Image (cartoon, rainbow, N blue to C red; front, top):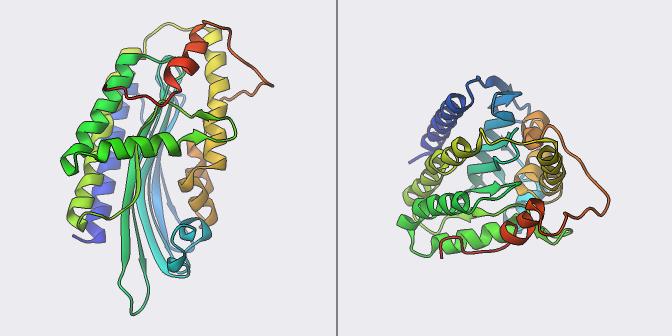
Length: 299
């Protein structure tokens, strides 16, 4: 296996996901190829004002550099200053219908090199669901698909990756989860290269199976201004997390990545309110009490 095999897989994954999403929405994604002056480039596939997706993007990037940036070297200080190479597919989808959840998925490969030293590599990835109005059947379906994807590589991986996801997608300043979780893993190289690569592939391939049935079930549900208003308010949490905590966003900006592609994860319409709380026993309050919690959805 080589870096070329990883890149070829990621390009095919992007194409397959976009094809499935275009079939769901009925509109096409635009294609925006770009080059990074410091090295590398990517392909951004974006939809705005579609029939189902208000905004969404499925990005491929393959970038490299001669000096590992601070955000990547923080947990591995011994790698600082090495040349590096990073590639991945990252997507965020914001449906217009408030009953359809926002979703994020990312799979990536990272390697560093130094003359006279062995290369260091790892894989990462995951997916997580961010509902505005939660449904238990959607939560169970999403988490079961995630579990089915990773369990062949280790019986305990789903528990580990779910816990990691719950801890990672947590807004510390709000003391609340961003959504209802999924799986997340990073710096993964405990298995041989071929198996670690296969794990990343299985996670990437599982995305459409995890999300599209949920989108199909909820996309035609009736909603009004109240639901749209709450959706815009909760989208603010998404913005806060991505700009303050997200490792991929910080790495992309600090390494001179393409800002338009990095920030395509931002929702198109967002609201903030001062010290707002949902009415007790309302559908909006149920999101907090029943879904924005750490829970074993498959118990």
